Image 1 (tube, helix red, strand yellow):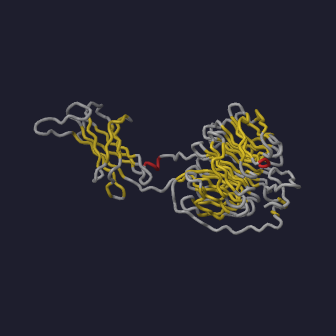
Image 2 (cartoon, one colour):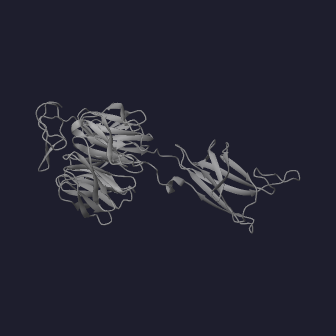
Image 3 (cartoon, rainbow, N blue to C red):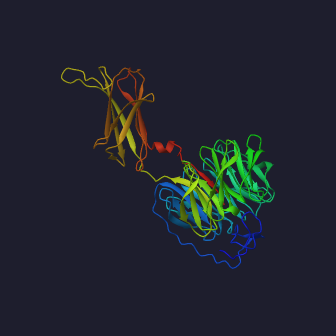
Amino acid sequence: MSGIAVWGASGRNRGGGGSWWVLVRAWVAGVAVLAGLTVPLAVATPAAAQTGTFAYVANLFSDAVSVIDTDTNTVVATVPVGDFPRGVAVTPDGSLVYVANTGSASVSVIDTATNTVIATVPVGNGPIGVAVTPDGSRVYVANVDAASVSVIDTATNTVVDTIPTGGAPWGVAITPDGTRVYVTRANESDVSVIDTATNTVITTIPVGTGPRHLVVTPDGTRVYVANATSDDVSVIDTATNTVIDTIPAGDGPFAVAVTPDGSLVYVTNNDTTTVSVIDTATNTVIDTVTVGANPLGVAVTPDGSRAYVGNAGSDTVSVIDTATNTVIDTIPGGDGPNATAIGTVFAERTPTRLTLRLEKKKKKKGKDTVSALGGKDGLTLTARLTAGGQPLEGESIDFTADSVLLCSDTTDSRGRATCQISRQKDKDTCYTAIFDGDETYEPATATVCRDDHDSTSKQHEVSNLSDLAVPSMALTGAHG
């Protein structure tokens, strides 16, 4: 891309020597002008459904999203989307990826199980920043040309609200409790705060010049804003919605991401091909990492061990080891990789059913059988685990009473596991059998309560325990 006269990503004119890469496009009446540039059509290369943690990187000039397996640091799929994708966000359960297509005024919805686009949602002109609420029910999209924020209902993939913001809304970040949305306004050098209960702007916060992207810390107390023109990062206290600190960064800070423990913030400096590492305890830059040309996106893995940086100018993705703050791998990307987000995909598992039976221990040859826990007149807990009506062998079952582990057993060829216990319990004690599930089978549980005044037991079963649980996937990302 050298030799093309373009605007730098921070909004400054970068002429003369060097192959300064452009942020993308000139916005004139909502029309992108890229003189002499031919954009190739992306070809779908969907991968088979799989589990794991993946980095989703928007490729600006190839109109596609690269899917990188973070275990192998290889591109496992390329998904065609709309024109000039600039923002990427993953739902908390890892099932969907929302991609803001700046050039086509739309948001592509990718199904992570198949790596295919399952819906395209029309939004305002120039969508660029995108974020998903913690409960996964809404997606907020900043439309830089329309000066508004579109609100998408993820259940129907339709726009249910449009919030006027004025200015040039760019980056979007949502608090962990889902009550506030912070949106940078690049032309106004401030941040708008949206109340999600009413979807109205409740205040604006002056920050540095030319703010691009921002991130909320995991505890929800701070917002870090990358100011591309003033070369610094503003720190907002969410309790007062005021700037409490300003941190000098590199040249053209653009994208920003925070580690899951909230201790480090990574800021891409587009004009100096580096990433600044901020210690949130002191709000100082403690390290600077050299990456590829024109870094415009960054995201941190759920375990906090690595940061992935989309380098639009060198068509690569840099992988930073957060323990040493060094680049440990460089992955070939598409044409103009920028916005980056990371999510964990969970494979669809087979539902299971667990039953539990409680019986008095029987005498053998005139003697009581002594339980494993000691004492006579014990009880036998018998659990049976099935999937699709067929017994599951070799699976571990835990037996508990009042949340205290009694014993564990492995299912036999009939799907049965047993636990021998004494009857030194309260008469109304409830016993529970638990199957934790695995990559193939969903968890399940069953409970039986015995009333000593009644010779029968009352049994309750809960299958598909995963339906009651909230997935623990970590989402982090910055939108380029």
